[in-house]
Structure formats: structure tokens, C-alpha cells
Length: 454
Image 1 (cartoon, rainbow, N blue to C red):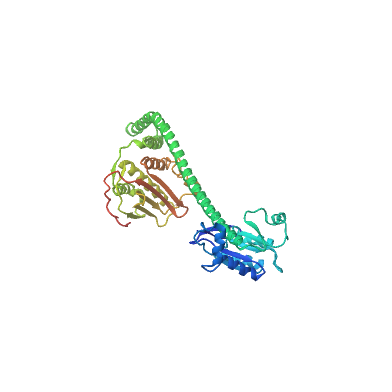
Image 2 (tube, one colour):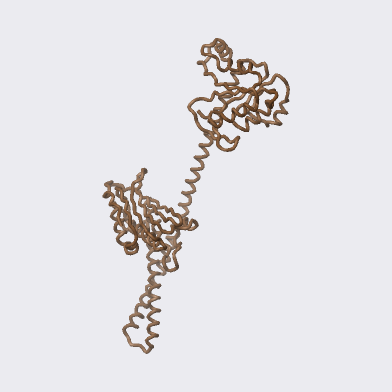
């Protein structure tokens, strides 16, 4: 059943659960005889005829329920002592549910001040102020304590049945309030989690819509640029050949200048051509046929193609666990892994003394296959991390990247119903994680781990 515990400042309870109902009662009264009266009423021995008589009077002779459990009663003779006991109980995760507080307790603080301090220690405590005198009017109490549903007044001399009824009702109220609070906290956490999930979904949806719109634009743009680019490349090639083959009235140094200009122009035009190819690929990401693909084979092919860029000084670590086949475009996945390996190789060339590249595969509990490509490079700045999959976004120097590589990887993976994420810490490296749904058939595992090497 719910109970409260304390964490941090007073009056801010943290809820926890315990195995039994909270029947803990605190009696604060300077008259020790009153303590014994409360114990006789709330903690009678089993089979007590007076208890049976009380329950018969409360519920009737034919409707008296199964005997209810007794209470655990602690007592204090002064308000200050009672406040300390309430604080200790909270700290020990054994709070009191109800406190019966006398209005007059000389020489210490009176019942109203005691109640005020009790609530400062335990905001959930139900309080019954016991008084034989009109020391305070109700308005004066409310002025000090505020209007509260946790406060009741019991006139002395009190009736045993009334005390027991109050104890049962208020402990039940205490329990129901905490159950309600626990439920509200659960709902708040569920709402927060659902909101977070919706934000993720909306972000991905917006990104997918941007990519779709960009894909349509790119297809038309690539077509418009490709034709004039073909003429430019052809003419530059012809000019370069002519300068090599035919005599010229130009001075040798002038010929060399023209050759250099042609080479630079050809290099720039070739870069534009590669960009156009990436744009065309980007606009047709979902058109590639799918088959059952062995991820280990595709990864080894990509590693072979990227080996020259990775270099001989990079320590290559393979952690290949047995994984199922995936349903995908083999060419598309090869381009994804090659692109991620190239990105890692570029990161490792930037002032890394002992470059290491880790390639790993595993099967998650949810059935998805995971491929991780991790480098120990300089990492990605936080302000850039959220943009790495955006088309044409790059942190590389001008001319070193078109900014399409990772966006193409993103499009291919998400088009397969998978996901691709990135984690990075400056100075510690970057991990790209590709999650793919397993194949629709032939769930045979790829070969076991191929070990760790250089």
C-alpha cells in the first residue's frame, strides 16, 4: 500500500510503497492518562468485548464486519517532541497517518502551533485537534493554519466509538490520497514519455517531408544541370587534348597555364557530376529492389573499398556477432556502410595519435539488427550533431564534401523501415548506429564473429 517518504526539503514528500496499510497513529497530549485511553480504544486485545460492542453499535448486530485490525499508537507529552517523532518517522519511511493533538500542552507550544509544525514535516498527515475549551475560534485556527481538509476538531471528553471511527476513516483517507497521488504521478510520467515520443515522431516526420520535397526538387534540378554539364566536360576534354596534340603559336608557359586551367575546370566539373549522381540517387532511394542480404558480407565489401582511405595505421576492430539476414537493397546498404566508413576515416585523420575504427553487429531484444561504426576521432560539436543528416550540410572544408553522403545514408536506411542514429562527444569520437528490420524469410544467421584484428 502507498506510504510517504522524505527526500530533500520539508513538506515535499516523495511517495513510495509498503506492504501493509498505514495504521500508525501519533497522540500528542500532556496528560499521560489520555495516552492510555487512546491505546485502550485503538489497540484493544483480541476478543475484547468492548471492541465488539463498539463495532455492533457502529455497524449494527447483523452487519458487523470481520474484526478490523488495530492501530500502532505512539505518544508524546509535548508538541516539540511530537514534531521530532513525525520527522523521524518520515526519514525512516514509516510516516504517521493521523495525529491526535491536544490544544493545551503547557509549558510547550500549543496544539495549533504543533499542527503547523507537523505539517511542515509531513504534508500528508491528517490532524485531529482535541480540546475541552474554546481556546481558539475556528476562524483563528484557519488564520494560522489555513483552510485545510486535513484538519478536524474533537471535543473532550471524547467518545471511544467516535475516536475509533475517526481513526479508521482518516487512515483510509490518508491511504486513498496517496494512492491518488501515485496514480497522478504515473499519469504525468506517461504523458511526459508520450509527449517525448510524439516529439521524436514529429521531428522525423518533418525531416522525412523535407527529404521528400528535396528529392522531387533534386530530380528536376539534376536533369536540368546534367545536359549542359555533359557539354562542358566534353569541350574541356577536347581543349585539353588539343593542347597536348597540336602545335601552338603560344609560348610554352602559356600552354602550361591553359593546361592547368583545363585541369582545374575538369576537376570542378567532375565534382559537380558526382554531386548530380548523389542527387539522382537521393531522389530514387525507395526504388531499389530488395533481397535477403547478409550484413557481414556487405560490411566486408564496404571495408575493402574503404581500406585505402582508412589507412594502414588505423586499428580496425571487428565485433561481428551472429545476426539474421535483412531484407534490403544490397547496393544501398553497401553505400550506407561505405559512406559511414569514409566519414569515420576522415574523422580519424584529424590529429588522432592512435586511430581506431570499430565495426560491430548484434541482434537487439526487439528483433532489429544493429550495425555500429565507431571512431575515436575528434567528435562532432553539439550544435552540429542534430544536423548531420541534413542534405548539403557539412563541416568539412569547401570542396571536400557535397554534404549529401549522410543524408543519402539516412534516406536509404529509413526507406527500409530502419533507423540511423549518431552519438558523439568532442575529443572522444563518434558512433553511428544503423538499426534494420530482420529479413522477411530465411532467418539463417550470418557467420559467427570474425574476431578482432588490425
